[in-house]
Figure 1 (cartoon, helix red, strand yellow):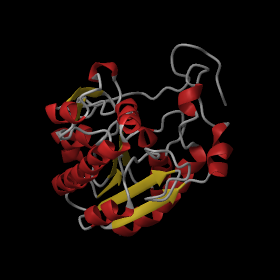
Figure 2 (cartoon, one colour):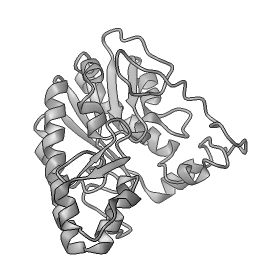
Figure 3 (cartoon, rainbow, N blue to C red):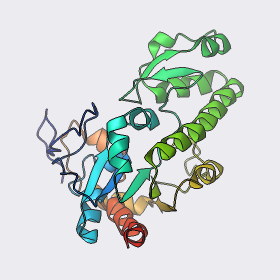
Figure 4 (cartoon, rainbow, N blue to C red):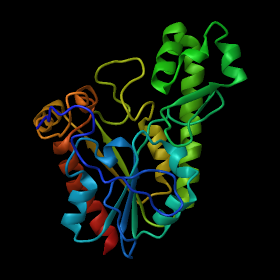
Amino acid sequence: MAYERLGESALDYYPCRYGKSKLLFRGPRKRLEKPYVAIIGGTETYGKFVENPFPNVLENSLGQPVVNLGCINAGIDAFSNDDAILGICSDAAVTVVQIPGAQNMSNRYYSVHPRRNDRFLKASRLLATIYSDVDFTEFHFTRHLLTELFEKSPEKFELVRQELKDAWVGRMIAMLNKIGGKIVLLWMADHAPGENPTNQPLGHDPMFVDRTMLEAISVRTLDLVEVAVQPDEVAAGFDRMIYTALEEPAAMEMLGPVAHEAVAKKLHDAVGRLLK
């Protein structure tokens, strides 16, 4: 249902924090009483515009506390540099990690905001040298930056793409090692790993992540749950999302409640096995 109220969000997310973390998560805040399941991820895990995101559905089906550590626009950097959140995950009976894209993290070519990882901060000297004709002060978001770099020179852009892919693997392995314990990877997208159904130059989220990259990090995990949401499933859930008129463009980018229910169902089987 689309609420037409302007201004504030139509859905109350009860934003909260855990411990000394500066990240804002979806509430209500959970008491961290063991055993519990922790789920870290980005906007989809947070459940933007979805009344019952998959962590809630999973909690109901498992009959066990599930802590939603999804953070809007968070990438690897937001979690890997947050000892409080990594500690919560380390203490969990099982940790589910939603696969993030490779674009929203600091690397040899550019740096991002430490918490809002989709925010571009500055280019490195190396990138400024490679793209000497680009004014980097014009960019505020990583997708805008990368789109412009690709359009300027697809050949040079391959250097950036490969750097992001390599850095992603290294950063993910380091984060998973910090978490330890039982870890389940979650692929939640509108396509299978490595596919690009719309043939867009940059592809869809999780951006640049392919099967080879997943295999490289899977050695540190116990399972990989894949949910490739079909267009009809996205369409079927759109009318059930809750958003204002101003939020509608952003809501149209989300996978929706049908996708969340499919994710919860698959996670129930994978996580349930590890809890036994």
